[in-house]
Length: 298
Figure (cartoon, rainbow, N blue to C red):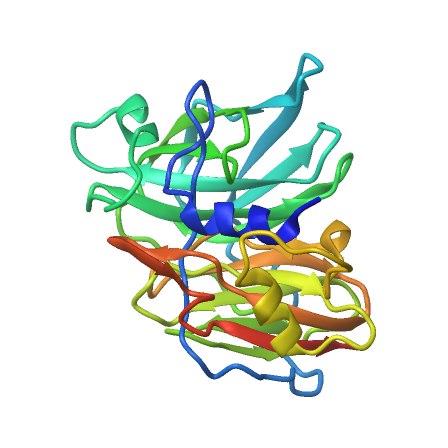
């Protein structure tokens, strides 16, 4: 597998989703290259995904295979009560999947949204979603969903079929409570605290102005962050990759100044934490701008 080429395809991808048309999503950062995770000690004692006084709405998104040619589709309820919403992704397919949400403002259609690459218009907004989830597993995210029209899609140019849904209720909604661990995305670096080996409920907080996601890829023994940067900077690479492509973990993409509580299942080890997203206008990926950190999970 040419992981570097796949990563660059991810960088090149525009917003969209798959469904006859292809999917897209991602942006890029600047240097503050090395960041080792501080000792455990997140931002809250209680895990909001294991019970919260806020009593959020709940919705379940299912992703399943269609035929035997690698195609897949999403299913979602037609309507969801807005506000604080727990979004569950049930992965019934044979490959890891995530659920990327997009909100459509104004008088525009999903088909129109799926044709968008760069620049991204103001009426199409990344809206969070659920992190990459293993086959046969269910993952959750807690986030604010204001009223509007949405669709759920995949990433890259994968042949997925989108699902659209409507969120009813207020357009101004409360932010989710804090979580025990935190990943803060800035323009263009990360700050991490409280991550432990195993399943983490993570406060993914985009405090930057740009769109960001968090892409965790395990680093092989002997590799350093400079090796990873060089590897992802080439369109194709030969030899052993400095990272393990089979154990990637990834959040959904958030707009600037947005946050969610999401789940990340992280084995102990050293990770390269990367943002591959591009700005809404296009341009270099955030990786090319230096948004790559080293994180140690114990």
